[in-house]
Image (spheres, rainbow, N blue to C red):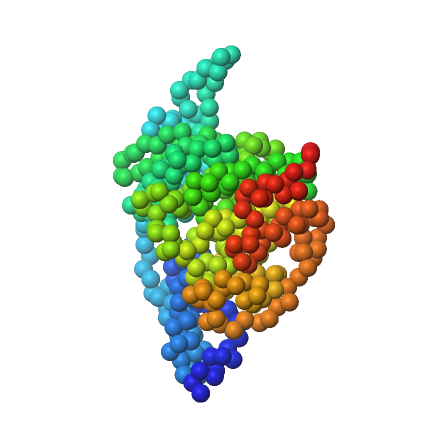
Amino acid sequence: MAEDWRLSLSFSDRLAETSKIAKAYKTAHPECNGPESSKVAKASEETARKDALTLKEYRELCAKTVQSLLMSAHNKPVEDKHIHEHVFPNLPYSGVQIGRYVNAQHYRDGLFSEVFSAIDPNISNDGTENRRRQVALKITTPEMEKPPHDSKREARILLVAKGDHIIPLLETFHQAGGRLVLVFPFMPFGLDTLLHHGDQIMAATRRSILRDIFSGLDHLHGLGIIHRDIKPSNILLSSPTGPAYISDFGTAWSPSDPTSESPDEKILEVGTTCYRPPEILFGHQAYTSKLDMWASGCVVAQVVCLGGRTLFDAGDLGSELALIKSIFETMGTPNLDVWPEAKDLPDWGKMNFAQYPGKSWEDILPGAEEDAVDLVRKLIVYESGRRLNANEALQHKYLKQSD
């Protein structure tokens, strides 16, 4: 009888307890990121579920975890505000010299990096006039990075992955303090920014940007490389109409790189919240480049219809359970007929999910072109082997339309 209460524990109940723990963990550890707090919360909730003998005891164990985290936050001494910063904690945001680049301006922050923009002091002659190009300086501290982040591997992969729609790596150099600097051409536009003005993007521009993305992915996948973090902010553009370049290879995987995981034991903590595919949410470590195709399908949905809204919602904390619920509510709860590979996923069958019927694609992408909806439909597929590959996406009728 001890298992009966677990079988009746609803998905929504577990999600609610996990969310409470994640929020408390974030309060106790403000330096952590969303995925980390979500991972800890999920593990704590699972421990409570396994250890409790009754539903009441389960709720009490979860409540004690929350209380313990909040108490630790209350009793935590004030610490140096720079202790968790990875690079240049006291560096001013402008007028910085980084290597041979002077007057560098702070541009943005990453999880394990800071990006500055600067003018290359070397004058290049294009045959008609002398020009100084603007560059982006990505400053990292490899020793501070946590897997799957690896800026040294990023540089190696970029050298192998040179292509028309892959952000070019111009050079790398080291600085004091174990810092590694990666230098790229400065791209003034990101797809994420453009999507917030989605209604102003011409249809021809939408298709052109998507062709560039799939062309870049086709090139990468042909080399066996999986990007593992395709999302709008990692698609950079030299102008509002393109061309577009795939950027940020900090978590990329390559079969030929010595520090990449083995093919059947790839790390699961990859991708960004609502762009993560279902197979890694259920523990599939032998995932393939079809991981990128699911993420690209999410991007296509935004480009052709949703704009700044995402196709799926992982909640404020980026919870895996919230993301699973969002996918199931949108696509329908899958069974083994729809998703045959699920039977071999380590975490499949551990929970009872509500049986959501799913929505029609016309409701998911209201007002989108029929061919555009068809492209998304063929990328957002539970069974990873049934998703279009990048070359097939390039040949899809939506992207073959003349502009």
